[in-house]
Image 1: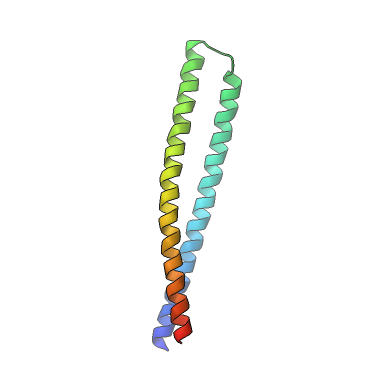
Image 2 (image 1 turned 135 degrees about the vertical axis):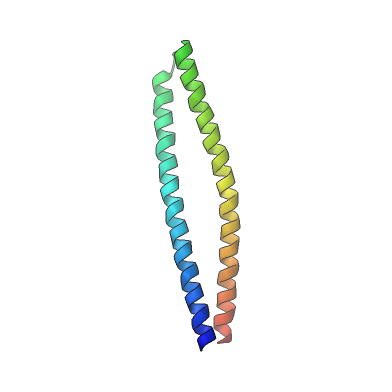
Length: 100
């Protein structure tokens, strides 16, 4: 009984943490998408321009896109690890629930 309650409270805490993580990820994805759209708009406005200032700006925007892409790849790997951890927790909770 007390042990079961402890497991339930831990599972509830895990679920809340997972929901908080999912909300944070969604917020971050929306922010990144908005930035990519802004970069695309800036690049579009610079199309055809070959002066030094425009080329420097294009270069800076492309560098930022590459930086964002690398960060996204790192985050994807982290998300996969987090998803595997959550799956293990869910399986453990399911086994514990079936025992009780």
